[in-house]
Image (cartoon, rainbow, N blue to C red; front, side):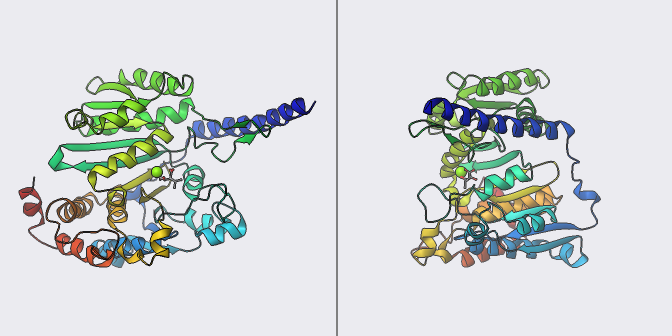
Length: 398
Ligand code: IPM
Ligand code: MG
């Protein structure tokens, strides 16, 4: 009896989950109007500090963008807005991953630059609410997590397209304890969700004359959802004969990123959510760590740019927040500028970050007082952006 009642409850739960997912598919089929930034009178950029080291590194990134977009800010073509309240304290108080008023503010912006937010888990002092990142990606339908990693001196030039609204994350907070002994989580792949991320990766490869695209799954074991991912990918590949396609399983892919001979052959990678989460942290490590990597969370209507790492509360507790590396957020800022139509400014900023972080290294970040502060490092980057010789300096290192 007990068991039957438990199964009935689980079935009821599954029924709700399925209904939600089918409604989501209908929304995707309807399609959302794409934002054309060139047509906007004023592009509203929201700046969200977040938790832990977030406000520190977001401030530095904002400072860079304010200098680089001075003319646009003065003319009103671009407007920056501070968005308060996406903090773990407030989220815990209202018991929501994104408080309603904060979500409203975010939706008033076309695009946001967001500092990392603390993600509670079972056993933390915070209520176990859904991650703010995950909630924002779902709420604004930011379906593509685009993460570049480059180490020119090692021949590494990778672009990851991580699916951002489905997979193990779609229902990450909606799993169920069927009985005391049986816990169940779900992973989800839809035709529409899979097609749109793989399409974006192919379009990127094709437009940038990159003739190599790699799909990463575990389709030999996770047969249904990952199988669907591969099937759709190979089908779509027929439309892009100029792009050579292969696929790897996540386990061996993780190993091959460490292989200096093999890893330089990878260029554009497309992968379901959880594999993308894991592989991009590993990838960023070659570039100098997660503190150096930015990400774009791209949707049709909204987009959000952020660091790929977490909020590092320990750095704050130990009084080391001012030594947090702002490079990740500044890179995210460069991606944001490119996304809203200022590709030339983004190129210059990325060059300056490369010069400071990969080549010249006059200042080094260590995350503690053995290295530079975020503020000084940011000034160093700005000096390079403002240097008329930046391009030749950058080229001399290639
Ligand atoms: C990331 C982060 C998030 C994720 C966390 C904070 C929920 O690790 O952006 O990669 O898992 O997606
Ligand atoms: Mg991650």
